[in-house]
Image (cartoon, rainbow, N blue to C red; front, side, top):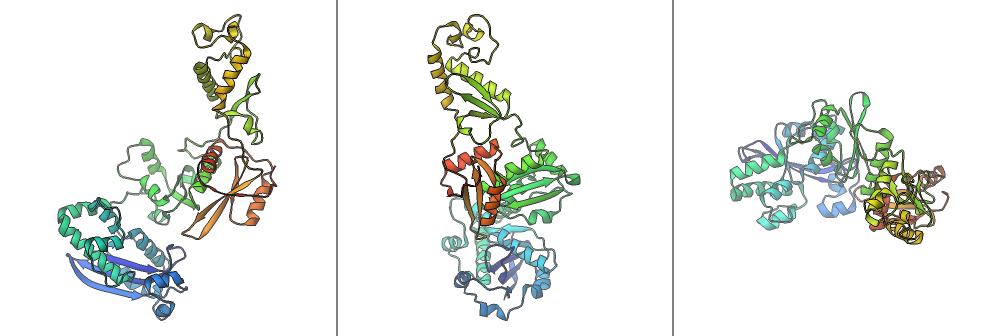
Length: 462
């Protein structure tokens, strides 16, 4: 592996996000035949102030970069320096993503095979829990000229590569590097730039086919990895292979967190009806059961209000009746007496085969039967809305220093807001919110089962 032409790269930047942060220092160690051919580094004028915390971490100040060249002036020479080499970095996705974005600003397309030494360390030294650069320096006794400076960190990575080759052997090292560097092969009609732009962050992604046909909507806390997994070389599912053949375009929408991604996915699937999504499709016959102590009936036309009186939520009448039959079998209930089987004289057929306790044959009282029914239904009761009015569920994206407020009323998702005006508009537009079973399940699980950050809002929705 060390015999291949390598470019060991390290960057210092103004922050963690390549979309709006910029490079402040670059170092490249060129390796050929296992030997260092050249070391090169330079400060870079980011054309934006360096935050105080970053200055304290790296020691690179605004005064130091004021007279340095901009990336645009360096781009051509750096592009040529990296050409034809394996791009090696510790957390390579970070450095590669930043450089790709900087090259794009300079009008250059940059692509390279990458090798991440974080992943390589995990594969070669699985007995250790931590694989950041500080851990590698301490564990392997590496010498770092200047931590959090580009050339010092790049040199520490080069030391790790040589030491790992000695300790594990060249053959093991080569196999591990091939496994780590293995990239999923993208479909031939898919522009690799579409995938390169996807962040490793929470959100939803959309696959489109010929003519813009929606094929699939997915969600993930790590979008880029999840998208690439669809095109893995060892696909076994015929459905996944067909999807890979048909996809022509990928779009994505970033969210602040997991809940936002889940809610957005459920909404987009119902809006777009993608060909390959089987779950989260529209439930046109949504129904449950209502029981007033005397009579059990199917409840179909219920809104979010009154949901607390419903037992069980099902996507169809057929699913509801199947559940009721299972409940009747388990608790000896008489479906004939409840009006869910055709009436006949005397005992019902279910009583004759031992599944009904005998209300129809006067072997028990209606009160006893209905008490058993009520107890059986109790486990299916829908969750009551525990707040006086609408609430907002706050999710924060610490990387972008941004937040989203998911506005919810009576278990109905009204939308996501990023300002007070947007909250007011959502509440005003949703006077009678539309109930959605999938969103209800997501919200119940998230709001009642986790430590959600909930803000009660002015009760303008009703």
